[in-house]
Amino acid sequence: MGRWILHVDMDAFYAAVEQLDHPELRGKPVIVAGLGPRGVVATASYEARAFGVHSAMPTAQARRLCPHGVFLPPRFERYEEMAEKVRAILRSYSPLMEPISLDEAFVDLTGTELLHGPPERVAQEIHERIPKETGLSCSVGLGPNKLMAKLASDAAKPGGLRIVRPEEVLDFLAPLPVEDLWGVGPKTAARLREKGIHTVAELREVSLSLLQSWFGRKGGEVLWRLSRGLDDDPVVPTRPAKSLSHETTYPEDLFDPQEIEAEVRRLSLLVVDRVQAQGLLAQTVQIKVRFSDFTTVTRQTHLPEPTDHPLLIAEEAVGLLARVSIPEGQGVRLLGVGVAELSPARFRALPLFADDRLGQTIGEIRKKYGPQALDLAGSGQN
DNA sequence: TCTGGGGTCCTAGGACCC
DNA sequence: TCTGGGGTCCTAGGACCC
Image 1 (tube, rainbow, N blue to C red):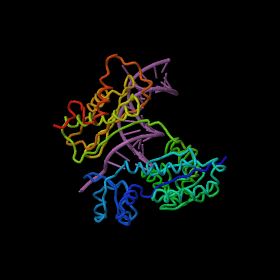
Image 2 (image 1 turned 60 degrees about the horizontal axis):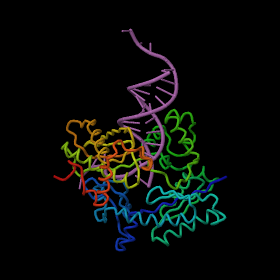
Image 3 (image 1 turned 60 degrees about the vertical axis):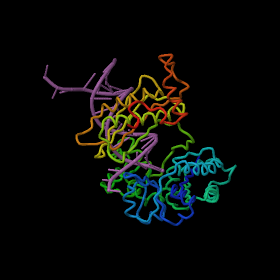
Image 4 (image 1 turned 45 degrees about the vertical axis):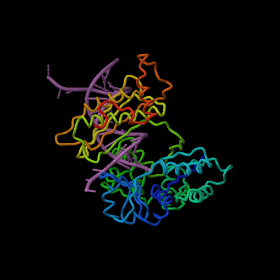
């Protein structure tokens, strides 16, 4: 049976929320960005895009392009609030609603016809309701799968609605540049371009076996299917997180080994706070170090048993740090700490030492009094 | 004033085993 | 005194997404 998948993409979401909350900013170039020396643009309003500003661009560059722009730091709690409003609207049409980020979501409308009418009409209704009820503009795409729904909403941007019916898929895809396909990024696009392949129509001419010889068994097959609009990825409302991490890019590179170690402990505790808050245990600890020249290394270790113990995890992270040799003359630009192999804490194994409640206690104190209440030796300010 | 932060997935290569 | 051939597990790196 054919599926109907809808994709909603909020237009310039963070900037639009700022313009909603601050009416005097409407019609002006608004740029939500990291404001530090190494910040990047999260979202530029369409007025700012006219100056060439776009997401992921260094804020410094955006300031040069758009000196009169209004630069604001992100207010994620507020965006989350508005995202939830949008999600509530979407959920009223199907329980199969999958948020992709704060500003995007898929809805599986297959089989909702008896309840809500034909998917084409539902798409129109959603497209009208979201601006009416939230004050924010959105683009809506409807297609036979996630791939086509997303490409349809891309084509509808900004503020439009686009429906791609199954029989229209191949013609719709044909003229698109390959990098429009989900999963084809700059590297893959460049490799395809070298081979003279620029559009999806051209990609479709390449045999499966040739694609596989270029991009591996799996990668080749994915490209082959994408170019034909084939995608059976299901809409999944919630998936358990597979990893949790915190990372920081420092305004200036770090050189002092003690400071670097203290930062790794600090990040570890931030991660553990989240692990405990979500009632999880982790069995893998990983760190990430980026040097002045932007080269990045990672180290990870598998623990003998799952844990949410702040000291244990922090010590593991510091141990991983010791396995990283910082190249001559390089400072540390970014540090990250993460955990993976997560499991629910209700399956916690009996503690090795019955009276070791220290880890729990640290977590409880930090929860009650905030992360500064109890830092590990060496991670304080001094 | 070059390049965020939080994720997912895939692959290559070495260790190890039979 | 080069070279087996799987299979699996683990780690590090990289591509990609928003």
